[in-house]
Image (cartoon, rainbow, N blue to C red; front, side, top):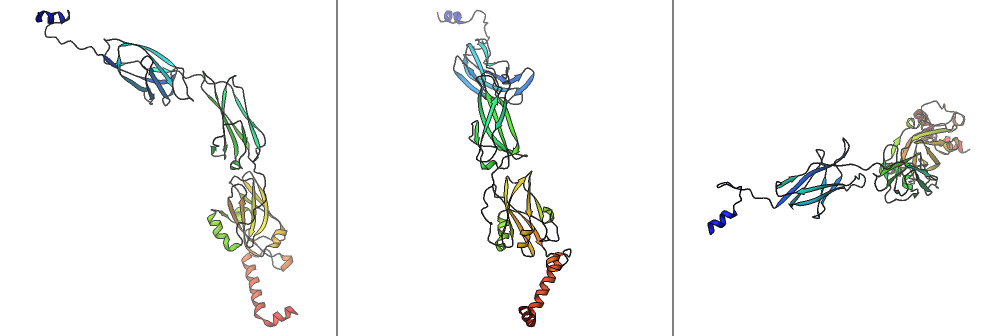
Length: 371
């Protein structure tokens, strides 16, 4: 009876001495998925969710630059399933792909699917952005969006450009902006990103052609009390130190009977700059920055107030607090002293000092001068 039972258990096609492979109860299911538009590789960096819908199994893959992102599921029993592929990148969405899969006992334990390509959604058409309002610190500007289909949701990102670089303003997802002082002297920017189901989000940007203006304010006063503290202040402020020549002033000294104009390259984001003249601080004035140049007027009245000698112009930005300095010298005029204004300043100073020494050395001369 035992022999008969064993004989009945052997399959009809089996032969004595032949081992029959066991049919796998479960399988590993694997494959690769990427994003492709026709023959063009679009992205291998978006995270893609892969799901076996009927089993509730889920995994994610990030495509690599080779042949797409690999994924796998373990211990999948025989059956009919639906694999679903969805991009998780909101800025590079794709049409969802579903792939039917039928796994039978005859399939190998390692069941590999054909590669899947996800087709990106079409770009959202149209769209323009403009900014209206005065681009002045403290004023409100308005972003205006047009041209997108009805139902489009728009996000706003304000920022600024220095002309060579730029940055964004945080937490300002709003069509209006009260212009902050941090963008004074820079070019205002606005990027809008439009979202609509069934389309890839589209971004449009606006870049101002004019610099943001910070209104002129009252000067806060000289940065230090006198020239004794000036060198340390300029060093701590990281001030750029210019010469007369760098500012377009005569190297041999300024004639107090003449008017001059100093031109200082100004790269800091300021609309207005306060300027002081040291040795003793004299307020020169507040001057506008135009196209990256600070033009400082030095009138004859101002120069007449300053003693003959070497001095320093100190410029302080009203918005940025940036500091620059320019060394200059004043010399005597021919009409007031009889000296030749064309003499080098050093010689003129020596003559002045020598005359003062002779006068002080002679008591008789001092008495005569009093009489």
